[in-house]
Image (cartoon, rainbow, N blue to C red; front, side, top):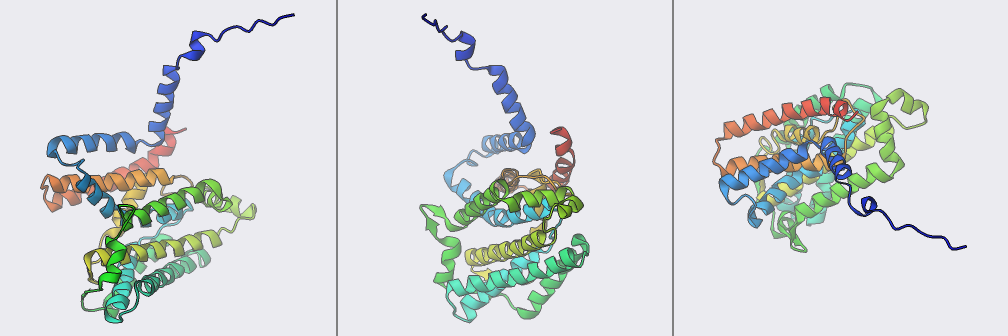
Length: 333
């Protein structure tokens, strides 16, 4: 007996536009910042005519690299239910230590960077012990550390440092496969963060701790150990960003380096959809938040917008990020 196979219908061969539209809608709903970013880029290009030039895009990526390097571990920390407001001062300390070792002590760039990372790890460990093991408020502790670390850095390095040598300049000025080294480092951090959240048990533990700390504890998750490690990693990342900035500028000042950096990074994290209460967020969202801030600042600069208006725009973005972090999870239900 011969079995007759019917030909596939036209409905099966043709794409389903409604399904694709629904998928696109879902993607926009998960990342509501994406269409806003696209519109902003188009507006800046139409008004400046040079926003999408290769040189300008390279400048945006380089400037945003330091923010991305710190925003990824900070986002993981926020997802776990904690916060670190001391990253700006840690950035300054890391840059000062690296510059001092490379410039005044004539150490190799590797030693200078390792010294900076060690300083950042110490700051992160102090934050972690106070918040995770002693149970103090992360907001209060890291706000205090923001001032304390800044004062400590000014005590150690009361004078500006500069002239770190051509070897140390490689960190911020070299190119890898035609891409600036800071951008390559930021890309590696972004990929590592995304893989950590998506593919490792520890990444799932971070979400679990942020959603319900008690339930995570009863499930056998180290509710203290994991956030402590994230505090240390965030401190290390901030110090690395400080070393990169010191390398790019070939100078660093204890009183001004990294001032306000913590608000910039936190704004990027919140704009990326990371809930300040913990338990939700993504590295892709953080990347969009970083790009949004970088494009916003660059576009306003190209338009010769006064600095105080740029500050107002960044403050408005922070409020918008907080609103997005609050209402975003409700819109996705």
